[in-house]
Length: 426
Image (cartoon, rainbow, N blue to C red; front, side, top):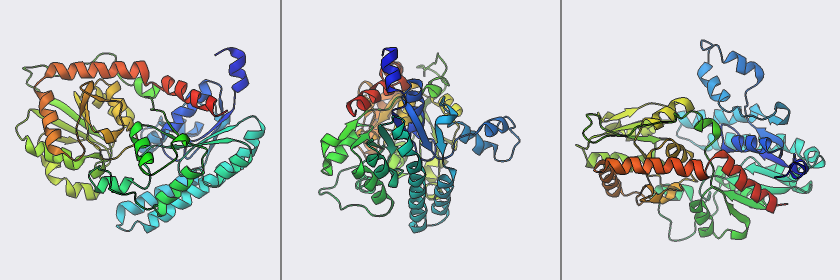
């Protein structure tokens, strides 16, 4: 891009990342690098004082503060408009859900959080438009009243939705990842609120062909849908060592398998548990990383008690990167995703992958990994055994995956593809 072209486009995109550590944070960093970021809206974001305090590891709550610090990107402070009250309300809802079977209060708090956040963003959009911003790229659910304000200010609205169509998520999980015979009715509650945001947008951006498939199933206008697979962010790639090793035939060590993500039925843990039970003498060790609610702890008692299984808890990005680097195969037999970031990260770390079409990854069967049907533990066990019998294949797939990520799915690649979309929206 010529200098004068880049300067002309500077500050034309407003990005709204929503609460917690979401991919739109590194998207904003990439757009800031390219001179296109006008403003970033987000929930909590580390202040200068918090960055200094984090150096004191004895400070109460330092672990939570470190998670906040991990959101930091190379974005000028003057372009960031954070809104912590909405994230506090959202976190309260998550806590309620964790300790209560009733979801009504959680839904009410999450909806309140969305609306608070939307009102906050709406305050800044008219001025941003006056200063040249003409694209409003917002996360589904966090648009709310700000979408109308952006449209009235003449901005093109792009809704970023990173999972299957809201009407299908619960059904896909309950139905073992398989589509229902008929279209379900419009969801209410939280997913209904998110769908409102989707329907308001000029364009809906999804992160995999599988998500696009779920929207087509629901009759969504395909001309209003764009697919851009996300890249692996720079700071995660920087955590990975340059060299790595793989399982060697004749080694006394087992083949190392890894699952990372929320431990529950949606991510395929039922299938993982059944597959391991079906191959009790396989020379493997399985590492689990991610949140483990009490309900899942009760469901997967036998899996967690298996001596081949190690549960690591919720890991920092540094620790997760290292665990991926040390693993041979990444297991992710999900029933419903958008395009799971952890699969891309595992590929970048050089893992072979066993997953499903529903995970929305770029893994193709026999190229970088093996695809298994959803909710088919026997097929999953068979895929595990295929790789156990061919150590060279594990290494070939892992090296292939590293190459795929570095050649086509880095943060910069994502920025290039996103800019093409933005330019088409001009």
